[in-house]
Image 1: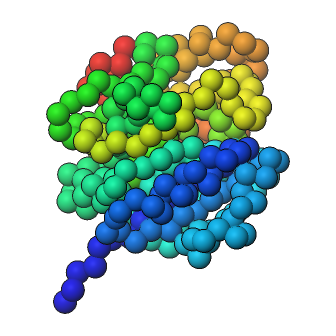
Image 2: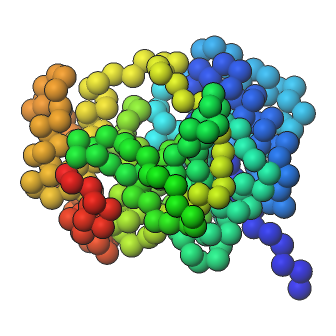
Length: 293
């Protein structure tokens, strides 16, 4: 029996990306690979016509286009995963370029059983020498990039910009947090959930993609949404002491008001369900990666 290579659905959440969507798809389909792929574009209420080119795109038979109205990046990714035909999922930003065989090499770490979810090194399109290698968290829960290592290594946080995971594992952890309706913390939350539920996240430093790092968002991002997501993540995964510490990070708006809204949105039953699924405690995870929070 001939063994066929696994297939990958590459999911792009999109909002007001200008020319970047076409740049990203052009690169995705131009690089060499032995892997059959489909691209899924989840257009979350763009108003700049960034996806208009798809109607005449040469590879449109390999692209699924979904338009939704302001559901946020976490739900957009989940929606894309729900439409995916293939057993492996790559989540990527829509402002990227790729190298030859990037997806083949990431896939190997997962299909070989070495990892459950893996990210590449991520360089800057504007200066490709500036590269990050997976992520961790600072004492104020800000993202920080890992330094380069020689071989595939464990990473606390998978950058939302690009990582690959099996559909089976993605569904086992419930995907991205559906309670997040705006931008913020969605990649951190799913990474914590993967580790806490007994899965492994890695970075392959020898696979590199390039990413457009932007100073501002091409759509409105508000503090309240970011803080809501922070508190929801804290209630889902943190112990009581760390929940209080997360609340202390809210410096814009009302910490009590945001906490009240999170609690009113049914976070405690979900937390209780997650506690039953845990294979690791948050204290152990933070000690493992020297996250002093």
